[in-house]
Length: 240
Ligand code: ZN
Image (spheres, rainbow, N blue to C red):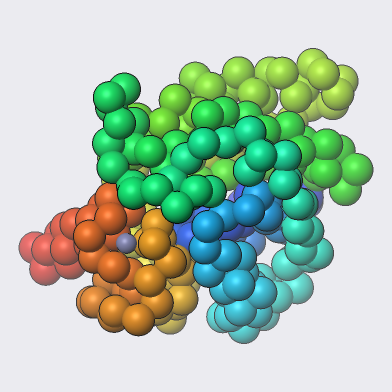
């Protein structure tokens, strides 16, 4: 896949998960300079944060032009988010669907906070573009993943910093299966293999059980979504 290269700088919200890894590849294909930001907010399992440097290095190794475009990585510590959150990601409680229909892993407004910090950092780094992996298609109904929320944040950041920001969400309208397909399209079999092997989705931080779709407990909502997405991706590929 080749896209027109923008001379601009983009900041990618990069957690080390499947979605943000594909978003990073997407940005490396499009922007002359790409920086990454990760948020450390007392996640119960820091597996995702651990795999970030490895994934960045592996992406840079895939293509010389990606290596040339990949800039600094930033980690922002958000201890305050953990302090005000009462959720399964930050407390030792089971991950299940609560009465309001949202998984208990939901941290209210988490992405609003991420975007605010990302906007401030992007401003300081001269990045007009913010790239994030939010998706409305097969997610669990997180209101801060919705397209309207993201568009509202784009307006809020643009007005609040008097600086034109564009928030890109390349995965907003595609499902997990199409995200696997996008990885393959952007970086071939090597990127697909990297996404399967090294990105992390499991809420429980399980890196001991290896499935055809990668590592995980296989039971939590994130594992189920990923397993189902991979199966659909493989079946779509067979019927092409
Ligand atoms: Zn899991």
